Every structure is written in structure tokens, then in C-alpha cells.
Amino acid sequence: MTPQPNKPKGVFSASRISDLLASGGKARQSYIYDLCLDVLGLYKNFETKEMLHGTVNQQNAFDFTVKPLFKDAVMQHDVYISINKDCGASPDVLIGNDTLDIKCPTLLYFNAYRHSQPKSMKDQVQMQMMATKADKGYLLFYLSKPETWGEEGWEEYDFERYDDNHYVIEFAKDEAKHEEILKAVEKAAPQRDELLDILVNAEEWDFKTLMRWCRDGNKYDRLKNANNMWNADVFRYDNEFYFKTLKKQ
Image 1 (cartoon, one colour):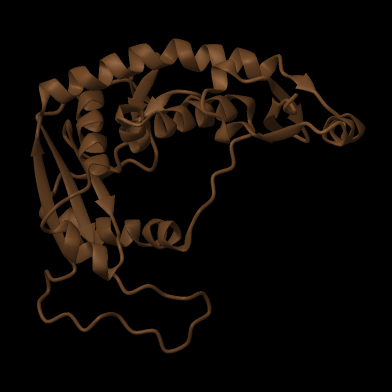
Image 2 (cartoon, rainbow, N blue to C red):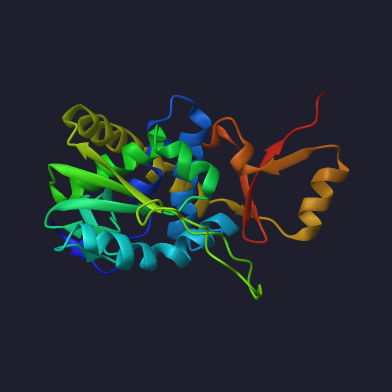
């Protein structure tokens, strides 16, 4: 393992590796684009209330459920572990070399995930295991009633049993999946670098240039909506990237 205190910009990571492995090109392209924005310092990471709920409850999940179950567990707090120069992972918890990721879904998904976990989570665990060279990986699901900021009289769910608020899913190392991930990263890394070069060298437009373009009957759209970003005619306006669409003759 090669731990680092912070994840390098632009590397492929376990949290979104399923986007890179997706059969549809849009998710893959969008992920590569987001990595380029990350390198340029322009990526905007929006946090939903569900994501905030997970962040807030992660430490409680570790203290109240992970630690009693796994005495040697260590909370990582976003420590990045590289696989190679282009990819790596940040498991929430290490148990020796084995990894554990904490999920804090709402009630509906907490009960659904007990029976079937999304492919994205399974891929994430496998990539975390790659980083630590683990034989086993875990997902721990922790349930706590959502709380609105400033809410008065909040009460936890009325659990009947002490372990109704959590369960653990164990995964064995999947060598075929590891190979699939490495091949996907190897293919995508040059495409990331090519797209980054396109963005760095994109023409900078000002307001008047943009208005003249539209006044002449032409159109433009956000680059993230392009079918193929590498073939798009890209320009930059107000720290956003767009592509040009010529008017029909």
C-alpha cells in the first residue's frame, strides 16, 4: 500500500469506477470530464441532503457498529491509497489489509440493500481491495433517522433489536473484476489527458463574442452535453466549457 494524506487531482478512484465501467458512453465521458475539471480546479462537488446525512453519521457508524464488530478497525478519514499513477482508492476503514466502506442510506434503501447491493458499490469495494491488496472487503450499512437542521424533538427510530440499525455484507476478491478495472483505467487515462489538453487550450470568449455568435443564428451548449467531447468545437466562458453548434445553411 502507498497511503497519501490527500487524493491527487485527476486520478480515477473507487467511488466512481462504475461510471468508467459503464456500457453507456455518457457516464464514462462525464466521469473523465469531471476529472479534467478537478485538475483545473473547476469541479463543483454538490452535496445532496442524503450525502450530508451519510457524512454526518459515518463516525457514529464506526464508533457504535464497526469498532465492536472489528476490534482492529481503523478509520481512514479520506486517506488515499494508490494502485498506480492513474488510479487508487480511499476506503473508509481498514481492518489490517481488508477494507470496509460505510454506507448510511435512508430507510427504504437500507432495507433494499440488505438483499441486493448496486453494482456501483460492489465495484467500489473491489477497487478498494485492489489498493490494499486485500482478500476480503466489506460494506457496512448503518441506519439512523434523518434529521432536519435545527429540528426540535428529534427521536431515533424505535428499533426493536440492538442490531436492527446495521448489517455487514462481505465480498471476496474478484480477480476478473480487478483486471477489468485496470484495463478500463489504462484505456481512459490517455483520453483524460487529451481532453484536458483540449480544455486548457480552449478559446476564451467574452460576453460580446458570445452574443455575436448567437445573434448570427448559431447555438451553443454545455460541453457535458456533447455526444463526443473530443470532437467538439470547445470554448470557455466565465469558467465554464461549452461547444459550438453552427446554424443550418
